[in-house]
Structure formats: C-alpha cells, structure tokens
Image 1 (cartoon, one colour):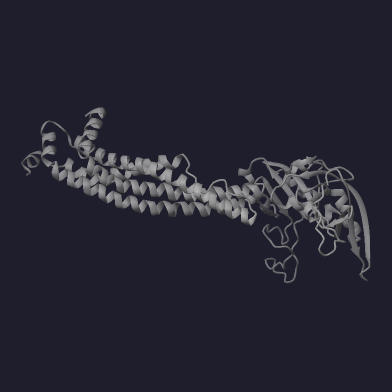
Image 2 (image 1 turned 60 degrees about the vertical axis):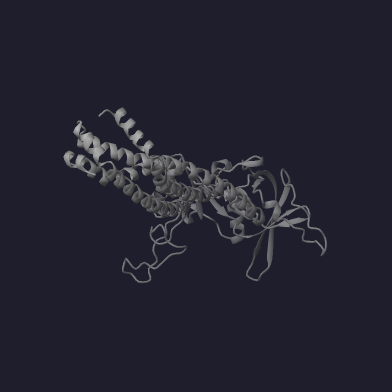
Length: 445
C-alpha cells in the first residue's frame, strides 16, 4: 500500500469517529501541556539563575591562589603536617605563585592573560575635601584594567603613575567625620578627575601611629559589575608593593615569597573548568564561577527530569486511554479487517493502518497540548516577572528577565514524544488486528 493511500485511509478512519478521537486525545493534550509547562518552568528558573551569575561574575576568569600542602591544589590557607612522608611534624613545602609559576600558567593552552594582584595590607583612609572613607585597595600588575575585562563609565581604564581607577560604588563610602546630629549627610561626591588623598597607617609595638599620605588623581570610574570591583580602588602593583613594604617594614620578593593571588583570563568561558583543573594539577588553588554554574546546571537538569516525569505520568494515563480506544475499535471493525484481508491487504498493511491511527491520536493530542502549554507558559511568565519585579524593587535587586522559558526544541520534542506514545499504545491492538484470520473475522458478529 502506498504511503499516500495509507495516509488517506487513516485520516478517513479518524474523521469518522471525531467524538471518540477527541475524548481520547484530551488525555494526551493534558499530558503534553503538563510536560511543556513544567519543563519550561524548570528551564526558565535555570536561565534566570545563570543570567544572575553572568551578571555578578566573569565566567572567563579564574582566581588562582597559592596552595599550602605540597601541591595538593585544593588545600586550605596554611601549611599542614606531612603524614604521607612518615616524618611526624615535618611541614610540607608550599606551592607559591612566583614569577616562574606565572610563566607556567601563561603556557597553558587557552590562557589569554595572567595578571598578578595584591591587596594593600595596612590601615587606609581615603580623603576628599572634608570627606573620608574606607575602601578595598587592590594592586594589579597591568597597566590597563581592560585586560581584566573591566570597562569604565567615565574616564579610562589605564593605570599610570599618580592615578587610580575606582569602582562605581566607592563614592557611597564617603562620609563627613564632622557631621553633627540632625545634619543631612552629604551626597556621594563626583570623584572623576579629582585629586584624593590616600592615607596609609601603620603602628609600632607601642601602638604609636605613623601616617603616609599620597595624592592621587581619579582617572576612571569602573562600570557597575555587582561584584568586588564596585567597591575597590585599583593601584599599580609597584605602588601597592612599596606601600606594603613601608607598612610591614620588610622587603617583598615575589620570586621568593610569591603573589597572594593571580587572575587568569581564558579565551573561551567553555574552557574555564578544564583550565582550572590543569592549574590545580600544577599544585595551585583555582576558583572559577564556571564551577558554580556547573553545579547550578546539574541541579536544574535534575529538576527538568523530575518535572518532565510528572507530565509523563499524565501521558502514561493517556496512553492507556489510547490503547483502550484502539482495542474497542478493533472489536467494532473485525469484519472490516476480514474484508480488507480478503481483498488482498497484508498483515503489514493492517498493522500500519491501526498504528497510524494510534499515532494520529497522539499527534493531534500533542499538537493541542503544545499550543495550550505554550500559551499557559507565556501567561505564567508574565505573572511571575511582574511578581518578582515587585519583590526586587522592594529588596533593591535587579528584576529577572525571564521566569518561564520555552526553547524551540521543547515543543518539537513534546510532539514527537506524544506521537510515539500514541503509536506504542496502539501496538498491541494493532498486532491483534494484523494477525486475525480472515475467515474468522468475516464470520464475527
């Protein structure tokens, strides 16, 4: 039997029993709609979570720190007692981020840039006119913060002698130390291209304070990132080093003591986890936002499977309905089956007809379920975004861009799955019809 003739015959048989087909397909509609809605909800939650992570972290960045513990990589923040060597009380050799170690990191394929950084480890007060503030001071071994993936809303990202680049939220840290009770606090100052005083404090053994004051020009203000850069002030590494040496009274040798932290930027965010593993294998600690993203994705994949399974239960119930409908249809059309076989229809032809009818019911139900599920998902998305936007405005956070998301592959998968469920449900009744003996079928009343 030709495919076109088979299609016409299947369509005609389904058209003759519109009411029964519609009632049977309703179960498939409900199951398919449930799958589309629930999986779309899980995907929307995943997308919202990952978008939030993209907003607060650079997925191409790996934070590398020295490891203490003989190259164990994931070790803690201090040396440990080496038990494996059998020498009780012997300290393991720490793995430090020296300049030669930085060359090792640069040699890893996929690494774009390696930049050392260090914090100013001293008491700090920043003054502007009559205002004061305390901030996070970071020294970086690069002459341009764009190498760290940072941009500016004002000014430049370049670091030069006598200049600094500040975070978007640092002006909010200023206050008036001479403000009297009842007076209005001053607004955050506009620091762009202004001279500020960086006051570094140190204390001797007797608690006597010594101050060192530097006058620095604000050369740029970093775009708001939602992370550490917003509240940080960036200095050239050499200046930070000299201030740390002054504060501690000891000379710093990075070739011997190593850096406290190194930023590794990779070419592609998809390589971040693999490169982080290679860095760990070298004996360092490596932390990347991609690891958090991987954990989030794994959780939501499980959630999608669970939600999809709930919808699949409804499809299973619908499959039983399809099987029942097809079994009843065979009993009603037994003589018709015998007549088809008597005029030359083969077992394969009869099997194809009844499987096609079962698949058609699944297809019709799946199509209706996709339409209803998509419309319901869009409605839920609008309501959820409005609700979450109100919550975000009250709590001061950013509103989500999406809450329920239906990717293009989901309706296609749901339609194929529902059609396949229909076909499998009609397999047993179709086999019964195909194996009927023509003489017995013709005599059936």
